[in-house]
Image 1 (cartoon, helix red, strand yellow):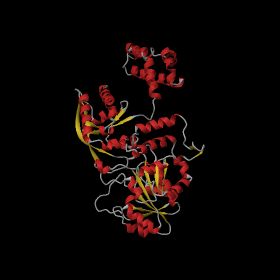
Image 2 (tube, rainbow, N blue to C red):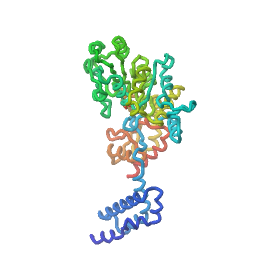
Image 3 (cartoon, rainbow, N blue to C red):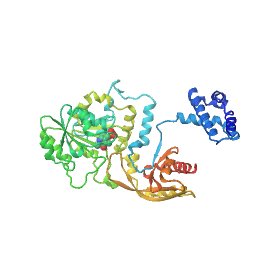
Image 4 (cartoon, rainbow, N blue to C red):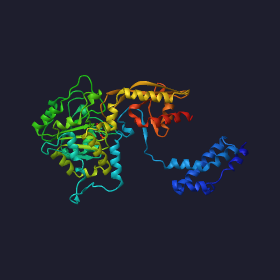
Amino acid sequence: MASDVNAVYRRLPSVAEVLELDEVDGLRGLGSRELIAESARSVLALLRDRVRVGELDAEALDECLAGIAELVRQQLAERTRPQLRRVVNATGVILQTNLGRAPLSEAAIARIAEVARGYCNLEFDVEAGARSRRDVLVEDLILRVLGVTEEGGRYAAAVVNNCAAATFLALNTMAEGGEVIVSRGELVEIGGGFRIPEILSKSGAVLREVGTTNKTRVSDYAAAIGPATRLILRVHRSNFEIRGFTEQPSMEELISLGREAGVPVFDDQGTGCLVDLAEVGLPGEASWSRSVRSGAALVACSGDKLLGGPQCGILLGSAAAVQRTRANPLFRALRVDKLTYAALEATLQAYLVGREGDLPVVAMLRMPAEAVRVRCRRWVEALQSERLQAEVVETRSVVGGGTTPGASLPSFAVALRCAGLSDDALARRLRGSRPAVVGRASEGRVLLDLRTVAEADDEELIGVVRGALDAS
Ligand SMILES: *Cc1c(COP(=O)(O)O)cnc(C)c1O
């Protein structure tokens, strides 16, 4: 037996022999010499393993060797495929931070492509032929979309890398060396280790906690104001709820307290929400425009949450406060690139011209459950087979990504059950397809909520799902 195996081993070519094959040499356009050699080595190692365990006899091995160039090509493709790649989000979580949050609109994608292809006026005043600043590019547009342009130049806006950066920059600019008053109910962790007390400490400000976890009154803030106070900080509770015996002053109350005491208020609003969420059945959500209009000195929000644009952080507020953040040397370290500006501008323009429904995030929010159900039915008809049991089930989609905690939208999902596969195994199989399909494993089934799947991809994805389950 051992000598049989040895005889089969001897049929295996050397790496050098594989590399000399014309078809393998023809792969040179697809990878470097080193990568091709590495791929050939790994194909040979795999074949050797299969021979060792008795999976390949001489005849079967010869068959594999006849197609060895294709095996090398596959290994090479594996080694050169992008690490960052498309994933189908069938979780029903609209803003999934792990899956890249907001998908961009076609207009934003087109603007990115246009700006990326060549040069642009990022810091150049084309008319004057002189240097200009990148951070003024979208400022007017932001103010216009928020409806705060007519107020005698009182407002200004600046863009940085994300909302975490915006918050850090605001705290460092406004309160370094002084005290910041925060309610104990808002000393939160946003996610990814972004904790308000730690960020405050890194910004060089001293945290002055007031109130309790569930109740903080405006009088608690008032009692804490002293000569060292630089800022009142309000943090939107993006990812949790406090229910029951609770109290929290309104923004308006905080701002009027701040006015009396000469202390500015900074609102870490987070979501950047401009659409009316009550309209889609999510009442009581903080809106970005309301926060801005409340009179806070500065408001920070994300570009890639409910605004539906690229990752960035927007600081909007009084011209004087925004000016100070721009003058902070950290501003340069937190700035965004031309691609972000291109996508942000296109995103904001959609709101300006009343076409915010073109933004995928807004479209998903507004999509009626019935429309999701119709698509689920099509999937079920196409997928149903002897092995695969598919049915339409009711489910709830959530907004996610640190917005609207606890709230959900009625939706529908394709529930898949596959003979001989646990829900986890089925979910793994779907994640292993190209593109990876990410659903929710639940009670022996995998649910695919189609609210977060682009309808234009339906045909393709039905094929992908079928392929993933046939290959068993
Ligand atoms: C999401 C969020 C942040 C962090 O925003 P990023 O853009 O992810 O940096 C900060 N504050 C609040 C209130 C948030 O909701």
